[in-house]
Length: 335
Image 1 (cartoon, rainbow, N blue to C red):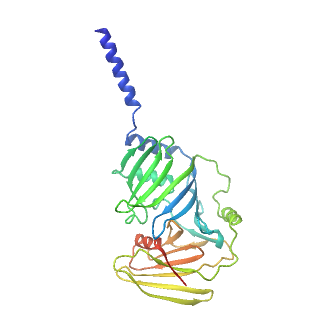
Image 2 (cartoon, rainbow, N blue to C red):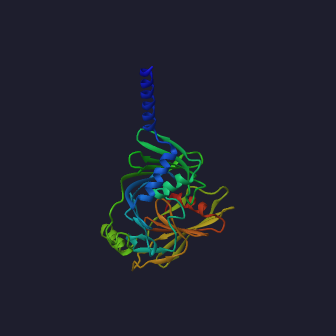
């Protein structure tokens, strides 16, 4: 009888040990993520972003720095273009820099708190914690959460699959999907480091503008010729009804008019190199288009890429609709 009791106690203890060593639950992992956000002082990472929007996938390199509280530095490097962009946040405001054009824009904005960003760790964790319907799965090395998105164009990209490392809780990848669960944006992280030490001035505008211009010198002038692009995704019932070239002091501006229930006008012209990098105050909010950082208001969206300025104006479209159209401006017709 005594042997049986000892054996039973041993089996019970072994079962408890196995249970304790088992897979963590969704509640366990979300609790760990909350504590990670609370305890960390910041992070630094590299990433690659691929956009499967338009005819051909486009790939971009990202460098992301964050320091509590409220300091951000995000560098966007298109692989085939020399014109990189940078978004900075410090106590003076939010700034979007285009070093090759000597351009600096200042926003009075609560970015990035106003919407989620695929490349910001705290945005991803927030989306996980705030979605009561998040789907949790695991494999040998990862935790995966499928959640709803909180992006500025979340109507067209409503879902995301966030993959985290089991060992460190660092982000491994994010796939952003459309209504049919087709991935259209993928971010793959590398060299993720929690709690790094940043140099003094790491988030200052002038220092970052100067440093970037040493790597990619400011253009002395911009070539006047460029490829006029067309949006590949249009709202239902909207069509191109007119396009024209308008002479300007510095070259030409191309104007495309689209008519329908969600009408809009798209302007394109070569960028100017600014004589000074002093920040220009901007209305609206910075918006991540994937290939560029733009500025969106209730009635317009502007961005610069490849040495060309784009301006989309509409009284009929919501912000998320303008963003969706802007992201699809890739169709070419050489002028």
